[in-house]
Length: 119
Length: 213
Image (cartoon, rainbow over all chains, first blue to last red; front, side, top):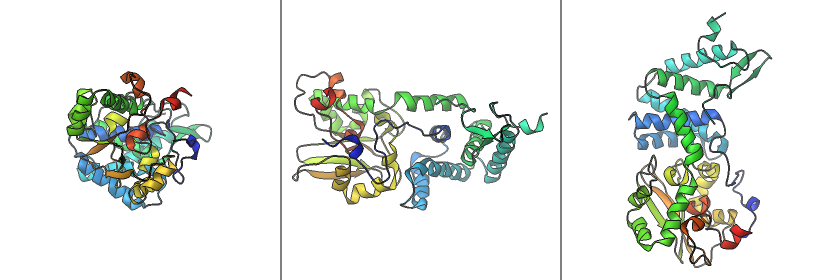
């Protein structure tokens, strides 16, 4: 235990003690939605772990550590679809709607759905 | 970070906003799930706040410090970690079935989740990046001593390393060995020696010298 902190390395990985819990807000949202959907009984945690493992395995052993929550998000999209909470079509349409709304919103204002139809 | 719509969009041609592809996917999911009554935005914020500020390795450190101080509690942790930990108030997702992997003179325990990132949230918070990454997930099993060396841990030859692979159902908390020179210390003071990594098994508890210097 006498080596300085920064000598400890797994290739390409930071082993700092105090990294932030979430690197970006969307990661926190994806995480929280998953926990709440499980609490609601939409899926068991075993099913969730299987869905996440599948995405992680598909990404392969060279996947960057920063991509972890992207795998999480893909697993969440898949499992909500498989469990019938929402369809892929619904999801993609809603994503486009947010994109249009964002682009119609002046920078600095909250983005709201339907913003593009207002004058 | 709070659920703040202004933080995840950035400047676009001076006038309008643009959300990243990923942020759009998340907003699509969230807004649909809210409309359908699956999630409540306020509850999401509260959960995020909890994991960012209240659930973390300090919880686990209290468990370990209590085990070091109280032989009866150590025994309960050994035989029924789930309830021993729940009795301290650390209850929640991914802590439903806990097993304490207790280090001894001749065995060092180390925890991994080879398939994804299962981790005992109620006692350690959310896992660090390296725990979720492929190099650790694969090498913890194939070369635990090599991994330990990269974390700065050199174990004596006669100490065996036991690697525990977490699952969606069983989570492990490593109980490191109590450092020498801590006789008579209070639980609170002992807890300052217990690092997150020592409870995953990629570290040892700090020595009194390491915290005072």
